[in-house]
Image (cartoon, rainbow, N blue to C red; front, side):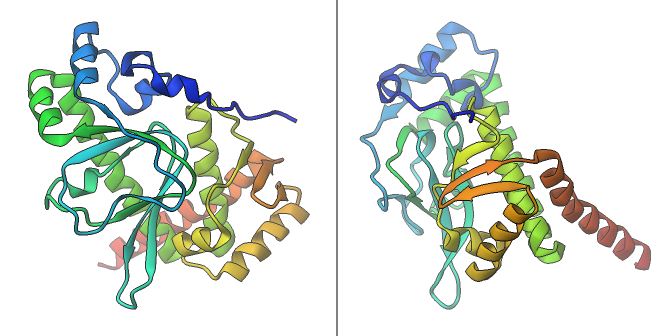
Length: 257
């Protein structure tokens, strides 16, 4: 069995330019002097324990955060007063970008496990981005990617069969783990079945049934929160069905109009 690479907590004390994740959350091609200037504005916060908030809805926007270890969920509150999860975040990803326009956080971010983050005060980051064109372009690219991900997620929820929704979720996790140097087919889910069901717009009983179904079909091996993908191409084919269905529906709608 292939084991996922384990994060060494001692590495979290290193500076930005020495961090193994900086190419994921920071722009490539910066000069050494630019990296040092960027490193000087970063605050290394104390670890955020499981269940603690990084920020809450309505709090003033002051910083963006680079996740270095652990995982975080972001969510809003719906009209019934319940959580509506909008995303799960892994090491190398930035959080808080959605608050730039309104200057207040429109989502809450809560740790799914103990996490380590780098805090980047936005005013100082904005000043620095004006001096370093590559940094400004990178921030705009990240915001664009976040919008694309949100649109894709909404399209999947609107049209995809439940099997394709879960397959798409697992394939996206696989891609994100691979990009970070971890195993793409052998990983732990830090989020609960309830949280996955919330994100994908399904009942938790449906999620449990689908995991059992995928295991019977030989796509996965599941032991509590541990997932081993046994047939990634087949899972990707199932996930791609939702993309194809959404594109076909969109094309038909355009023809009708």
